[in-house]
Image 1 (cartoon, rainbow, N blue to C red):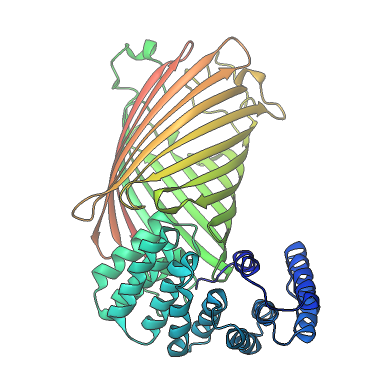
Image 2: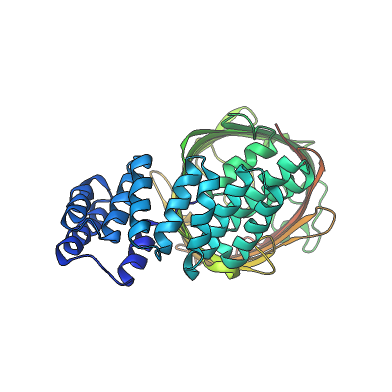
Amino acid sequence: MVRFAVAVLAAVAVASPVAGDEASQRAYSKGLVEWNASGSAQSAMAHFTAAVQADPQDAFAHYHLGMARASLGETAAAIEDLRTALRLRPDFPIAAADLGVLLVRENRPAEALPWLEAATAEPRLRGRAKLMSGVARLRLGEIDAAVEDLRAAVALDPTIAAEARYYEGVAESRRGDDDAAREHFEWVVREHPTSAVAFEAQRFLDGAGSGDRPYLIYAAIGLDYDSNVTLETDAEIGGDDLQPSDNADGNVHFRVGARYRLWGNENTALTAGYELFQRVYFELDEYNLQAHRPGLRLSHRWNDFFFGVAADYDFFLLQTESYLQRVSGLPWVAMHTGDWGRSELSYRLRWNDFFRRPPDSAVADPDGDIDDDVLDSISHMPILRQYFYVDGADRYVSAAWVFERRNPVGDGDELYAYTANGVELAVAWALAWQLSAQAEYMYQYQDYDEEGRVDEPHQVVVGLRRPIVERLFATAAYRGLFHESNQFPYDRHIGSLTLEYVF
């Protein structure tokens, strides 16, 4: 459910003509300062109550008191305060908007509709008022009118597209059009995975929309062909010959995983997850890899901003022996910038601890004497990314700047420390026949601290994804790595086909 931000409401209220006396204005102004400073409505309640007592005819005093009570869960009292504010000042769109929201939350949609309509008198409120009007009509069973309001909401305010598309999916589901509903839910999950409604959309996709299942289970199996498993250099595999008989191989891989929602509300979600991955080569079995990844995700929305942090622990085995453990942390913030895109800033911190050396490879072991711990490192990677929407958020181009600093830790060797700058470019496009396409290009300039080594990896990834039957998806992808270096150049081409099923 969408709610109007307290800061925005206060700004609109303060910008409007004030009718209350000076004592009342001082009291609720102090309350607003206290609320913003402490983040707690409870600390501001005394000031708002004093404002009402100083001037019972001050509509703004009743309004702020009502908003504080709503924040504290005193919904019935908050509704009466907002009604009083509107009785004293009928031309009060922000109070009408919040009264409509509270009535929808209390499952009184018929009462909410007139107030939400009144809220559209304020241009800044029209989009969200239409959204809540759509939700109210949906609860009244007026499916066609609800869809009309939800689509109008997106046209007025593209930043609420995730909520609107989610509720439009609910509307189509109730109308019996499962294909249309699935299209909306898939769009929400794909384009706004960190939004508060994405989890609920995924529950509908999993067939749990009418239940209380807080978890998601998935499984996938795939087939790869890898032209350069051991990362042999161009010099050793004959220049342009990318498929030497002793270096190329195919593999079968599978993964299973689950996510569980530990806690959440309309704007915040805390989830825990676990994934198991296994890759088995047909011939080069010394490169068989198994990975275990438990992790936590916390996300929160505030107006057009999204905040979050991800934490993962990875444990890898080569064949049946412990190979590597890795701990990663990723705080991030995203800002939606209307109908033309969104901006993201993240910072990844990663610690690598090797239990054993990698298998023989010219790149990993140029001198044949690498120790188990020589690659131990900690890396810092800030990323600034901008998405530009093209005819909607399911069609976009994006560009990112990536910085990385890798430092040795423990017995790690300075030989493998470097500083890198890079760019990432991507295009995503929704195609006909339920196909979704994505292409990425990544480049880094890696300047190593020792030996004058400079690496310039270029990576290209192209993929196509399509649902086959309900809950079953097929993905075909190509990954090309062109690793230029003054010491260890190599190329690698990987083609894959994967089937994924969501339970």
